[in-house]
Image (cartoon, rainbow, N blue to C red):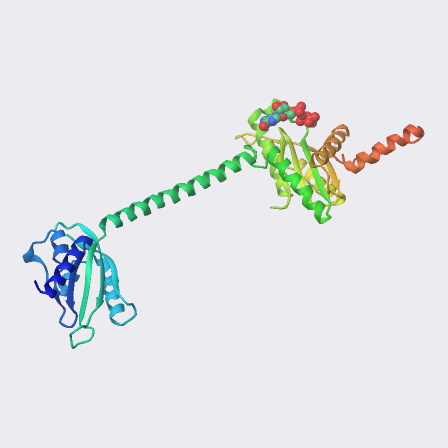
Length: 353
Ligand SMILES: Nc1nc2c(ncn2[C@@H]2O[C@H](COP(=O)(O)OP(=O)(O)OP(=O)(O)O)[C@@H](O)[C@H]2O)c(=O)[nH]1
């Protein structure tokens, strides 16, 4: 056996071991000068059916891959890429699509026409591609499930943070957000005001019109509170059954009192529809207002308690009434003063009745 034959045998052995199918095309005449026999047999064609023209070969490519293959050839021929490589599907005789890859290079060698001879190998990558597809599919499903979980999570967080009847923040959220607000307004050196709003004689509404009508009244007052608050600035929460809290960052005591007054009159001027027959009720609210001028190190719970005490005073003053903690403090001072000088009269700080 001559050296050339030995070399050919060595090459055949290497190709066979690596699962490679060697081919050679004459790009000038468009003929296949060495056919990818192994590939065509693998695709189910007989020796006689193996095509020998480039156009016939192209006819077997998947229509979606043909442009990629042709541009890979022309990129290599024009010197853009050092090798010709691409991945594509070929139609088996059964009609099934099978994934292959090509790796080749222009080898002019002994030919006179540059760019004439394209030599390459074809190898089956169907298993790898199917696994890639499966992984891509699994990834897509995981992404979809992830998005769904995130949506559910957001909905759950929303549910955990909100009052189911009114959609307002619930008491737990209020206490968390309020504590944060205390810190930030303290750092900014801004005042922090808070109102506790309570529906007057609400039990009577429930007793006269039923619990569902009572719920409608609660929702109407919640809307009135929201309507007078700044979106994404104030915190509006349902604190208990028929009690609400509004946190007003940066608002001083006089402004908070004006807001509370506007809310009080807004509620009392408004009829609430309580049943399908058009029956309406009018309710009033009592409001306690408290303001912190230096919230640094202050406790939010303390601020709520202070406003609650002012609310108690508003109820004592006959309801449909607004009282401020400042007023409560001055009343306490006046009371202390009266104890010292019983001749003085107690000053009422109720704003309206
Ligand atoms: N419809 C309805 N009623 C509620 C809800 N939560 C609490 N309540 C009722 O609210 C009423 C509150 O009554 P009270 O605490 O006596 O207060 P009030 O009748 O408003 O009297 P004052 O606050 O003193 O003016 C109770 O009858 C509770 O059953 C709710 O979610 N829906």
